[in-house]
Image (cartoon, rainbow, N blue to C red):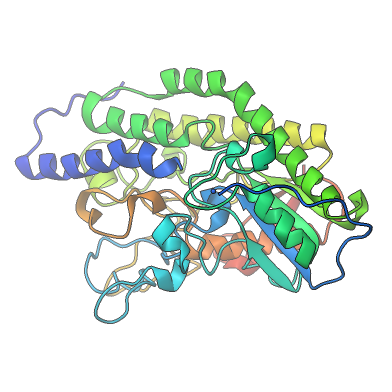
Length: 396
């Protein structure tokens, strides 16, 4: 059981308060586009430039692409990790463009943009915080989000102007309440000294049927839009992907369970039991559920549950960058830490626990490799000590 650590110093209490504030805000950051209609049927698919299109939520929009690993250094370029540093300040729009203002956070290294050889044009319609209803067409229950039309309606316009060859979808995590799960688990570590996995497992189980139904409908909506734009089923492919775990299992965390380094420095404030649950139970459960939807809808599935293995936040196999140790694709963490504690002033909270610059390049490599496999379901993993070029596929 977690130990009672009520006799903390005032300094640690202050950092705990900052991290808790970040945790409490997570559901707002993790939750969350004006309505349109599907195009009329066409006699044939367009003959414009080939295109690869991504739809969905923050795990494919490019959230956290700003960061090359993590560092406890809070000033300047944060030991080389902050790509938004201009030399005198920070400009996140250098990474996220105009979508930084809206919060969709489509980064310059988002998965679809990191797979440039798949098609002539890479188009990212995903938006951080999106739920399945933000993908549906407005005419079929879709909801606008962050000032943008539902993603399927945006896809309709793209499909008329381009020869779309691949549509990749990442959705369902926000429908399952990822933000609530993380917030609860962090609070249970920092305040209540209790485990979160029991009640949060029940919460996820309760949301799962509706969430997966939403994912299935999103896939139906994509097909309807493509058919309306004149595409036959064999003209393009749909890939549904799952989520990687940003947190390692307990035995692979480099910070002790007791004390405050796990929260204040590492940015991974979870009890060992909850870390094991998230890594080895929750993430695989969600992947299995998404694989089931993909199979039922006849689309290809890309399993990313092990994609960050050994590269997670606080992993023993990685290190933080410092003034004497520059960030590197081979040694740095590939996920953004929970931005709180000693690092509360860095970036924005919604970037926390998402694939960073290095991971998004790796995800692009995964997508490139998958596009070379015209059938079957595949998992994507990294090779220890290598950069994105070390990504490889395993049959599922």
